[in-house]
Image (tube, rainbow, N blue to C red; front, side, top):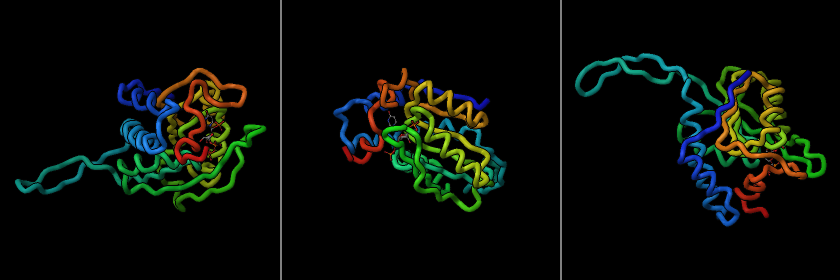
Amino acid sequence: MGKVYVFDHPLIQHKVALMRRKETSVKDFRALAKEIAMLMGFEATRDLPLEEVEIETPICKTKVNMLKGEDIAIVPILRAGLGFVDGMLELVPNAKVGHVGLYRDPETHQPVEYYCKLPYDIEHRRIFVLDPMLATGGSAVAAIDFIKKRGGRDITFMCLIAAPEGIAVLQEAHPDVDIYIAAKDEHLNENAYIVPGLGDAGDRLYGTK
Ligand code: PRP
Ligand code: URA
C-alpha cells in the first residue's frame, strides 16, 4: 500500500488556513497555492536519487551529489491542479508537464474526461499528479487510470485538502501511489464538497463564481 503523508508543518497549516477563508482574494489564493506547492514538493521529492559527480570549484576538484538524471513529469488535473504547477516547476524546472482535463458532473459527481496530453516518454518518468482537492476520489482515480493506460508507472499524488472518503477510494484503486496531503478534513457534504474544505478550488483560483 502506498503511504499517506499528511503535513503537520506550521507554515503549511497557516497557509491552508488562509486559503480556506472565504474572504481570501483570487490573487492571494493563487499565491498561496504556489507557496504550498513548493513546500509540499520539497518533501514529496525527498527520495529523488542522487549520484556522485566530480566538479571543479575555484579552489579544487571535488565530488558532489547531484540529481541523477531523474526525468520528472508534473501532471495537473485541470483546472484546479494548474494552481500547483508553478510552485513545483520552481523546484524542478526541467520537468515536463502533462495535462489531464476532468470535471465532475454536477448531478452524479462522476468525473468526465475532456483532455489528456502527456509527455511522450511518460513511462520513463517519475510522475507527480497535482490536484488541490481529493473529495470522492473519482477525479484522482480517473486521472491516474489515464496515466497508467499510457504507460505511466511511478506515480505520486499531491493535494491540498483530502476527505477520508477520497483517500480510501484512491488507495483502493491505486495502492501503489503515494499520497501527499496538506490537510485532511472531516467528511463530504450532500453535494460531495469537502467539509470544512475551501469551496470550489477551480472557482477560487480563477474567480469564476
Ligand atoms: C475539482 C477538483 C478535483 C475534483 C475533486 O474539480 O479540482 O479535480 O473536483 O473531486 P472528486 O474527488 O470528487 O472527483 P472540478 O470537477 O470542480 O473541476 P474544475 O477544476 O474544472 O473546476
Ligand atoms: N471539488 C472542489 O473544488 N471542492 C470540493 O470541496 C470538492 C470537490
